[in-house]
Amino acid sequence: MKDIILLTRPKQWLKNVFVLLPVFFGGALADGKILLQALATFVAYSFVASSVYCFNDIVDLEADRMHSTKCLRPIASGRVSISRAYMLMALTFLAGMVMLLFVGGAWYKVASVLVGYYVLNLFYCARLKQFAVIDVCVVAFGFVLRLLAGSLATGIPLSKWIVMMTFLLALFLSFAKRRDDVVRMEQTGIAPRKNTNRYNLTFINQAITILASVTLVCYIMYTVSPEVEARTGSRYIYLTTVFVLLGLLRYIQITVVDKRSEDPTKIIFTDRFLQLVILAWAAMFFIAIYLL
Image (cartoon, rainbow, N blue to C red; front, top):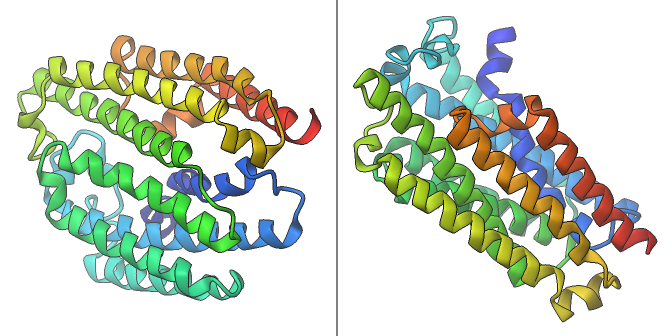
């Protein structure tokens, strides 16, 4: 059972918090009905994402067996058979679809987003991740789809700034993750991915710098947008910018200096400084929207 749970990667469910962001940014945390719709969407998205992870590990079986750490994954290590993995893949997808029944009247709209996400990521696992740049763009678009699912489930419209910011931030994290692959390739002479040869440290460092800068500017534009001020009723959201800057700088430090950017989720779970920055950002945002 432990290996089955590991195969679904529950720690990666943290990424699906983006589904809840429309509720948080929209100032609707106190609305119980909307919050339940968002939580149901979060669980549904998590199950569907787990189904994708199962398929990814099946496709990457041989490559994972040659990787220093991924060889310990349930399928690569032989602890879970391929047939059982396919069964789990089907069950988790079905569970995700069933959870949509708790979303309410907009369930079919959310279902269309989830199915689109699912099909896109199956293509990503099977083929698209072999192409440099395209691979990180697909990953980033997946986070935008999370936002869209949360918006459709709750009826809370999305600001154009938050959509752009989410895409850019996800691109930033994806390039940082690819940097770890390039470092590993330079150290071992073996490319962890088929497209790693199409990246190098100069290109990725420049991409990370550009994306961090544009993401910060986009966030500032979001915080001072008249549309956002009118929707949230707060003129103090711009105060949260300092925590976004600190978070970006810390992540660049982890990526470039510490060279441990392989798993963004693991970094968030283990890096105390980054955790404090995120908590401070969330607290300041909560105060600006709900208390000031």
